[in-house]
Image (cartoon, rainbow, N blue to C red; front, top):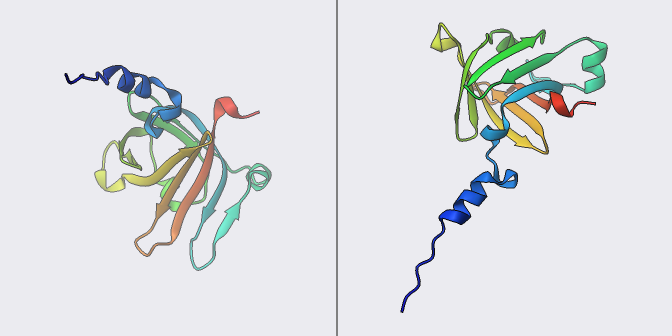
Length: 142
């Protein structure tokens, strides 16, 4: 006699457990930049949290569950400067910030969420880092 195993309860538990939550499920909320790298030429520039505070540089971005985002930034980086508030979409480990009027102005980042930090990476066609930023969720900032 062969027994049938019902795995639907296990799959439901796995989907509901925070430990197995997909990064996109953790994405909604307000994120604040605390460190970044950029490579505008042949030089890699690194800005730490202390430097961002001293230079009054910031980027805050908030993603909601309806796939809309708003952001405020004064980063002197062209790829970030062209971002406007709009909607976002995700495909695998890429997030695209969709421009409301012109799809040519969409900005796609590779992203990951590890240890409650959001990492956004954007490279140019030559493989140089346009932006590689680390964000903390606003609720975790002390």
